Image 1: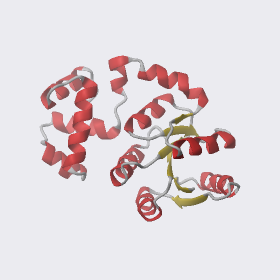
Image 2: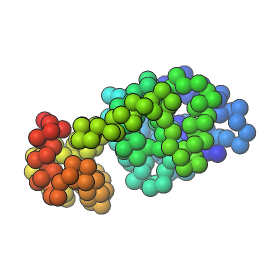
Image 3: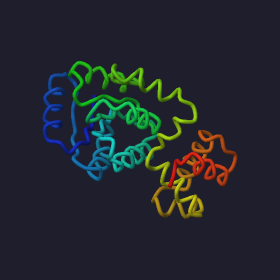
Image 4: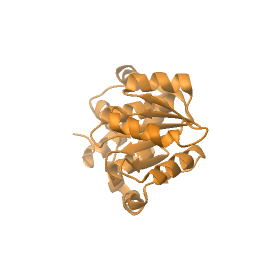
Length: 206
């Protein structure tokens, strides 16, 4: 199995290296930043990509989205600094296949990788109930927008067109259309103006 770890913490890289070395047939590639992560993803075509995350790291959400754009069937496992149910819910909604905490037991991390590689979804056991609760909160769950979704909603509120969004966010028009369609569905809006109005009413954007 080919694995890509994108994380800038040397201890995490070292620990994962030792963990993977113990698994016959597994090979780990490392990247310490987003640019190197994209390059390695394209070159190595990993079976599972592991992204080190923290709740304030909006750049990693952009990296997650970029990897999904490059490989629509990419299998992403997010490795959080702490057990964070809100972050777990956000990354799963954004397209990740799993969320594990860096302090999970080695056996759990191995199982997380295997589950994601096989097409399943993984959550640290301690987070399952909290994430389920977040997902069951109806419209309140919409407050957990990804940074990309917040940016799209904010720019639409300021009057940018879809073409302008595509240019300013440096993504394809098709990607923007898909994101907007997903946002409309989640917010129960039929049009872009209605979606912006709902976003403002619910204070999803400032």
